[in-house]
Length: 357
Length: 281
Image 1 (tube, one colour):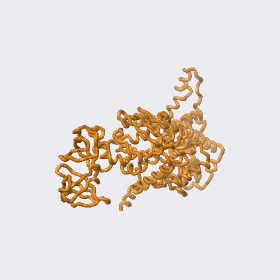
Image 2: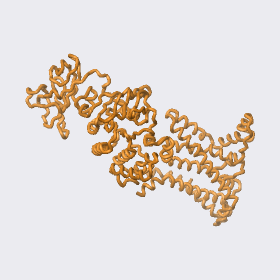
Image 3: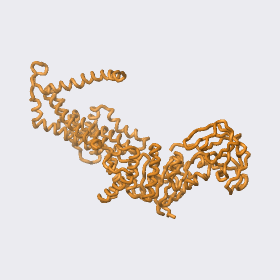
Image 4: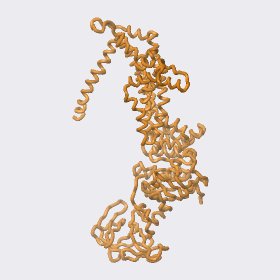
């Protein structure tokens, strides 16, 4: 197992009485790709900026390789940042932008040349040395920003929504490229995004945040399949969230139905939230063969599947299937016990409201 | 259609330009290249005499003095103005406009009035000297003299240096400064390698906006310099108003104009050099 590189302990940041980051605890290991995921205003960027040294925490500690980092100024930290809008030096060409950090560190000319050239090759910008940055496309500027940070060989690279300004296709390409780069240079990436798909694609670990509080830490599979509360379930992917009651271990009830599930450890008759992912609901043509009977009220073609809304007597279900059932048809729905995720309820923090960052 | 319509709106402006800028300019050029009685057109004949007169050492010295004093006061304005602009740009937005006002309010007062104010402050028995005597220091004897003229120029033109630099500085993306810190630059390195180069356009327009009025200024040297160091502006004024030698006054104006154009061309060259390089590729 890799050793701990960064530890956040009860880290807190307030702005004018508002708590942006509320006493969070997080451990980041070497070579890990960690994503801070959440809606805008959830404190993810503030957390990143505290690690980078651009914001002073009001409370708590940042440890870097076991040493306190709180009072170390940004320019002395062994971390580098890729900023949201790149923040490139418009008065310098690509080469000078990338060489900036090395020149400050008084690295020898030949060494600078070697490292800058190698880095430009890695980000696929060979021959762009003399170009000024504002003559480059968004994707190219993005690569310069990454090269400018990585050339310093930091222990940690902080990325603040680095792909936010790119179009969808380029973003997907860059996701894969970033992932390749992370694997090949073998350094820790701390990545901030509000795009859940991006987080699922790239991360070793996802940290879901809302209102300055960490909601869940886990692998993409954990986060998707076993969200711990309503907020996470709702934020990551689409889901049917149903209020129900946990009768006993492995037995959950809602809408007058009693279903088997794989969850346990709740108090008898505890009120819970149940998550069923739309792709986990199977449709049978004969309504009597399903656990739940319903009428298809809307069908939307989404490319890989059809997205249907099926209305039962008590609620609407969002269902994704590759087979289409026409509007108005009455069908049955089945769910496997393993596809039912039961979560504790009553978490005041998991409101869906968003606030401006 | 729309374009032509819009073009027509510009006509009054074109007429205005012709009457008040182009025609006077040609008149000055005309007077500078002639000699004779200005009230009698038939008497006027082509001559370069007034230009030859500009080359006389006494007048060359006046021109030299003008450029020297304008240059020094521009430099002083830059040295004082840059930090001031930086302080204002880094001030909390709430107080920024207030601070800016402190620098702008003096411009609202009449130029002459401001200069007279300095006269009474700096005169041998003025406020400044009375204060110096009171605290037991020797009298300051800068007025009349070059020192007082410089002070007057700097005072009058400083806002024109502060404003453009402030504008450029306040537009610099703070993330760029953070990026420099992030890459290991402390505040000195960040200033030298990032902030200063990015603010060059502001410096260039500040220099232009101070140097141009400073080089052609008059009155200041008359009032604060006691006429000991006449500047080219005073000389031109004198030729038109008291000496009544419009030919010489015109050629002085033309020479001044050409020298200003040259300095502006040099400045804009410095300003646009990065773009030039960009275009070459």
